[in-house]
Length: 493
Ligand code: GDG
Image (cartoon, rainbow, N blue to C red):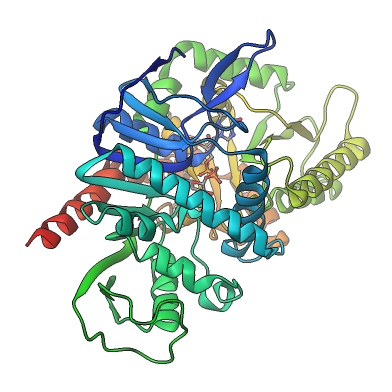
């Protein structure tokens, strides 16, 4: 990717997320370069920014990188540098070892450290300063995700002329869990700085509204929250509703289920070279009758262990035969310096090693496991080759992998097994829905998916495709930006 440094121009649309869509890397020859950064947020936002233009503020993915803003594909990229300490405390610490487990049903135990919170506050302030500098007068600013929950309030204080949206890509937990957080009121106040707060599921929006009522006492009604312009109880826990005495503003908090650019996957999957690659993958795997596929960041929320356990029991019980059926699991490397992620890797790889050690034949293994990232073309070839797609998240904001699989299946074939704890299950109701904690149910679902008659597979996949194509990422971003435009119009009234 080339980079041209840019001037102090300002923009009418500014997106801000922890990571830029590109990561700074150092090549083998020691020179600096950029690559696409991983994960669902970038997958979703990249097409939006290419359609609308504007500036994108975020961290370039490496410590202590001071790079001037530059243009890439019609977008101004504005790097916010983070030091090694910031990364340890704000990113790996507060974001990924406090908020991430807390917001995902405490699947792992959140750790609360006051110095991590201090780092979170100061990095949120730096992101705010960077946005305030590139946003033009009256601009729309769209803040993304749990790493930046204080930005809406800080930004409103610095630049009251802006219209501010916030979108939470991960779940928002029930109050009984959220209330563990020592800084819960500060987080709610931070978010309420936005005009529109978007969540993946209705349940997340309801949880947030409850936290607002419990911690701030503000009235909430059908996704509208009445927030006093001047907070009369900053940081104070209130009991029961309060009646604001001064002027109020209305904050919208509701669901905007995120999606993908479905046509990209459909087009890739229709390419002859990718179809040939899918055939090649099947041949390389020893031409099994059934390929079961899973692809996730290696994260404890994704239920990778549960799926290996269920599949392993089917192998052990002789209900699936090695060579006839193979589970391909791509576990892309993620957050490798955070302790629970190191432990998870050991746990998963022990399970894979044991199962393969016990049941492999010469030439065939039950699981083909890859702790690697693959290019999007290769992923699409895997989606096409997969007779059964396994998404067993224990808690997931949406899960774009499920939608990518469906978008790739232009042949209307393939069966999606989908956890009811992934946001995608609200829409993709024609998948085989499972509770991944119920290993017996998961085993039955795998057997059923493998044997589902072609007619039923096609009918289900057609309905799933309709949902994914009718509700793609362009619709998601348009609806969110329209809601923000309404908020701006109301504020100017
Ligand atoms: C968060 C929320 C929400 C993964 N491995 C490879 C690869 N990927 C791509 C997938 C997909 C993305 O990464 C993962 O998105 P998910 O939605 O499944 O999960 P998170 O990263 O946890 O995303 C999630 C999302 O934000 C959006 O709001 O849905 O709930 O947790 O696009 O394809 N892509 C390539 N190679 C890999 O090895 N090319």
